[in-house]
Image 1 (spheres, rainbow, N blue to C red):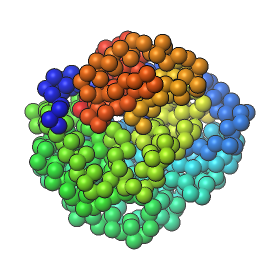
Image 2 (cartoon, rainbow, N blue to C red):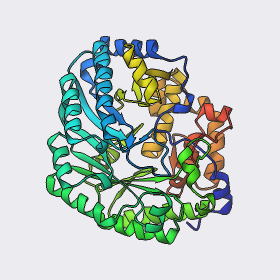
Image 3 (cartoon, helix red, strand yellow):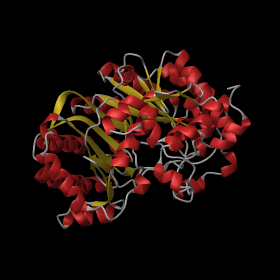
Image 4 (cartoon, rainbow, N blue to C red):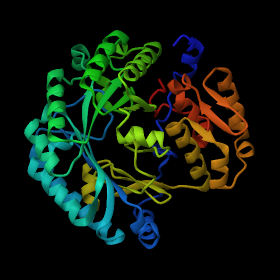
Length: 460
């Protein structure tokens, strides 16, 4: 922390992407729609990857019973649980349309249910959803099958049901244990409830438990967050996702209920991140990258050590760079050299399916330059280094020539202690991990051409 100067804090107290993809989702265009997506699906079916590489599935369930003020997810706040049954029928329609172009029974090695609150679905509805997915896809043994859980909506009996349905990984939404912070974000959630659920999940036999935390929330201080960190290390989840709060009230209406003066400043946010790094390292966690930590025997930590780490729309992943099918309102997918996103409103999503169309309304066909820059950015984000030779062999370029301007910028960052640049590699320093998004941004062609970054969260 002593090496992080005020100048560095000021320089990087700016918005920037989280790089769960490159190009980032804000670059998707409406010129890419269902016809282009269907072409990508058909090409996959005809190509060698159809059976060799398993798929990843993401299912977006948008419903929540109550509003968390910090949330930037696509969600529908309702206590009317009867709304979930029609939504399940539309998910089935969407899967049927996919199978018509992909073929039935394709292997799936990763499934994630996100939201919203997936546990808004009843046990019977979750059972129907999993049965429907298994009828159309083959969930392979040893895969990662995870679900996001709001601890306020789940008890031990429900966890047992989730295990019977085949889920082997849980993600618990913690955010912060401090009562003042919980009140400020409208998410009252006693720590005792979370501890009881984690204990139950271990007894039931879930392979991995993840806890989500957010720093930079209203009323948080470095001292209050350190108390939360102590509780989290006592909880000892297998994985920890630590996110910086993105305050974008002009884009996300619920955030307008947060009082801006209650938000911690950049120096306090960096202090929180530094304390988290120290606390989790002391507790025996491996630092996976920007926002993820894992116990050494967890699959994510093993993948990091073996150089198999990948980053996708759910964050860091152990899965290879496989195709991702996004199902549900606003879901994002990646098939071949394309990205796609479904309609963001429930009405448009359902209307398109009623007409027999897949609900893809925007996306992107990735260029050769995009693929090259994606490889560089993901190497920085996942491994903390870019080896020039590996990029040159994969993309048939001269790295130092192609990225001459970027390397010159990085030499300025080297002088500030964020990276080291040699004749063969760029490596992120231990201090550089605080600002790794800023390092990756150097290679973002779109961002360098467009300095309007208010759409993104701040780097720190």
